Image (cartoon, rainbow, N blue to C red):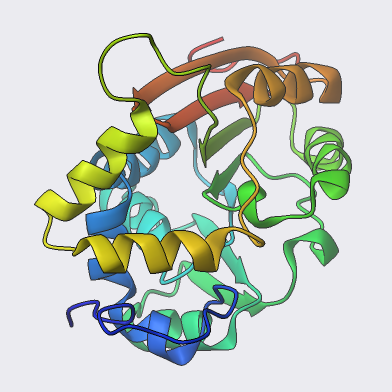
Length: 245
């Protein structure tokens, strides 16, 4: 279903939320809005699959419609794999439950801040931290590092803020808006969506994310993807060396 939520002029722009309307068009919305999304999702599944063994526990925090979980299920053939997919948006997780029928995955409707990831071999945390209150981000990442299994892998994807715009050429933000218009969004849609996100998506720099991961106790921190203002990192809990450490 095509995303036309911001197609018409709106007199009052409300803060963006993962409503039933958004859930109904989410695959189209995120595909046309996030550069690299169609690479990040399958790569998250592939990296997670190469890191797990039989009886592994994986958490997909802020799972939305379960795309990353689905990618992992595709690449991992183990019958004993256990995925817990968590989201606090009822419309999103209800749709995910309806579309993904696999005994290896269970869905949990809850805030990720309430969910313990004890013994997790992999945690996927894609495009979620940017929606949390900044004051709560350090505590979440630190808790994940403490609760995950030794040698566990964290996959973290975020929109990041850019350095000051160059003296010549377009900024990343400008290029991102051009890219969305090239994907069929009008200038009005881009502007209204940006306004809706202003109060709910507060992005930080790559350095902020790297510092937070290291301070939480993760090691082997690497950025494996970057396109304009979108980045993805992998990090590991220490000891018992795993693939990639």
